[in-house]
Amino acid sequence: MTLQSSARGLDRYRDDRFGMFVHWGLYSMIGRGEWEQVIVEIPAAEYAPLAKLFNPAAFDARELVALAEAAGQRYLTITSRHHDGFSMYDTKLSGFRITRSPFGRDPIAELADACRESGTVKLGFYVSLVDWHHPGYLDTSRWDEYLGFLFGQVEELCTQYGDVAQIWFDGDWPNSTVAGKHPGWFTTDQKWRYPELYDLIHRLQPDAVLLNNRKDGIQPGEDVQGFENDLPGENTSGLNPTAALAVPRETCLTMNGSWGYVPHDTDYKEPDRLIATLLRCVAADSNLLLNVGPTQSGDVPAPARERLRAVGSWLDTHGDAVYGAGPGPEPTGIRTRDGRVLDLTELLPQA
Image (cartoon, rainbow, N blue to C red; front, side, top):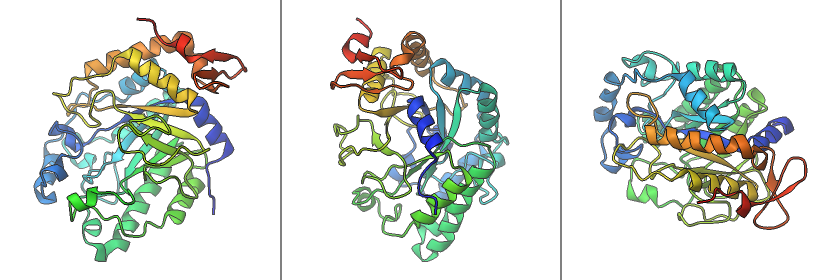
């Protein structure tokens, strides 16, 4: 079995340091985030008809990749399927997919083309382990059927869109209280057959790094330890109980308070705060995956675009403090690719 990404993939990932997370799906039509279906307990049969109305005509893959490039982000990891089970690509394994909506196109195929044209931004995929639509997930007596579906979708993503930079799994949270609060929506005690799943990815995409947002350290085959809305080793969000390990790390961060599109959430972090977090991630030997939540029309909200461009402008001057950089000898130090030591506090934008 292939137990880890290639050295080339891991080196590239650590060198990139800064990526764009994209939470976009059918839930953007509701405008209350990606968890709304389970929060108000909408049955799958009542939720699914939203697909008949989904037509994000403003989506432009080249514009999204250009925005990531302008922000100085080196990879883009998008939700191929979130917990609601709606596939945002042309899967052959489910009719509950975007190519059967009025939109009718495969946005991930378009993003793959745009990333190849860019030459700078690489494409990665978020894959939900949870699926509130698939009967094999909701009925554990059909668990093998669900795993066949999950493995099949991962194989599609690894073979249909060219080179993949990252696979980002979500939904298996050991000792989570979420399942107890929402019985019937989560299945956390089944076997995921991770060694086989990870081997599939590493064989098909040897340069792709693999992160599983399990909140419980890492297992063999996982390349990156993830931290949600926190720096490695911190747990201000209550979501990161595990200590930072001596492995590649990544902080995923919302730009406001939401992952999926929520129009009334206007509490966006200012550019200086985002830059400070990026620098602190580098000093903690971590990447930063900064989220955007496109609207139901498929465009990125203006406040997010403005902040990304501001971060990119700063990186135009100070990119050596981020790309290929890592922790310095002091807690507030950053060591550049060429060995120089920079003081984080002196790099921070001045008020």
